[in-house]
Amino acid sequence: MRIHSIIFVVASQSCVHVSAEDAKLKKMLLAQQTKLLDAIKSQDRGTVEAMLLDQHFAVDADGTRTEAQTIARLNKIKITSYSISDAKTVAFGKDFALLTYKYTWSGTDGGVKVSG
Image: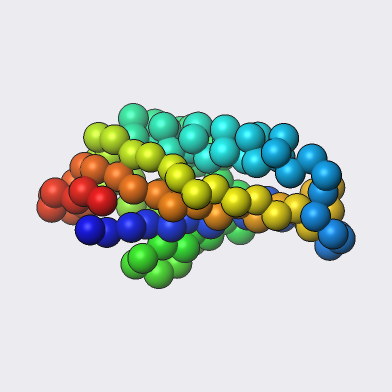
């Protein structure tokens, strides 16, 4: 079983203690991440490109990927279903937050069937 963990980071300039509105922040960040994953699933390259910053990076079981590598990977993966669980959010000020979660998916990666 392969488990993919993705870290979605919203960049900022300040770093302070955890916000009292973590639940609201978590909901907003999960909505954005779901929108991105839905775009990847539907192969909507335009939406994926619009949502990723030049400084984007993803971290998963295979290592890290830049924005260009993430977009190039769209040609290799086909997602038929996915789920997100165990989401956690930490706010480091009003403009910086870290979202981590467990990501499982089914589909193909380079033509090879993937599930987990």
